[in-house]
Image (cartoon, rainbow, N blue to C red):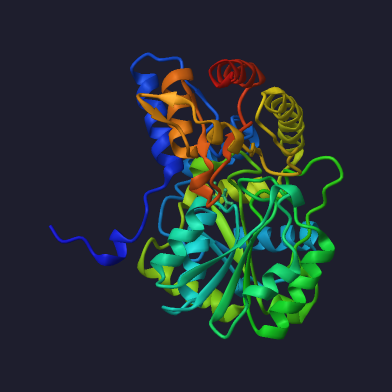
Length: 397
Ligand SMILES: Cc1ncc(COP(=O)(O)O)c(C=O)c1O
């Protein structure tokens, strides 16, 4: 069988691979605790589920407009106006099968082979592979634990050249939980205008911010700025709707049109029932978000405190999303003996923790950040406590 070069170049998702391995162990009867999954452990709020049931009963089961139903686009417009202070027209909105498809369509629409895409790291696993799939080249901009994993305009400027086409910003960030400083974002926005660079703002974790962190949508910084930004968001994380697969993008009409062309020939419309449910998510009562956020906040504090109690681990308190991102480089330098080998990378360390402590988590290498682990705290406090007890025990000097 001949597999295309394009597919050969794509690395499989390490997050999905570890989640699958943990599920397999669970099926074998092992009591695996998972800190691997990137999704809330809450159910979708009742009012949203009810709207989906009504949509089924009313027979809303046909193809819809490929880029999404008008009712949902209008709900998105209102949301962007109210929460993010950005005004769009429905022709500047597309609804897709998850924010993931919006990202894929945007990158394919903007990038030609050889174009450079600036990507701050640590970064979410799929950006790099989607950029490569488009034939474009990811150019990493490292952010550092000692600087709170913040991104600075000067670092972006340093990487810009005539091939730079796109910058991807993800704040609040997966995996670090960093929320970028508003002043730096404003400076970065000016660079985009000066050097004519497009920017994807992946705002999927916008509602999950803690303490005094504030999210800023840079598309709100004026009309000229809006012409360079594709704001991407969705219902997965804010409304515990990961399985419903609804995401959306807002941006310049020409780009949205390009994305619609790709979608029209690949998946067509996102699921009709899920679109109706998403209208309710955006227009209905919002209290479930605050309930989830408060629960995550409590777990966040507990998890980070416990991680920092483990000798050789240092972990920042994340300002957003639902992940802790501890630095384990000292443990890797020490090199735990396992199966006749010394563990000296985060992938082997994750594997060791999964096999020996039956706790699933994701290696930093999946996020272009060797020396770290990612633990999701979107799971019960009870599991967090038990999982950390197990990790502490096997990592003891
Ligand atoms: C940073 C980031 N962007 C996008 C997505 C994709 O979200 P969706 O479920 O809407 O496809 C995820 C999911 O984990 C994510 O972490």
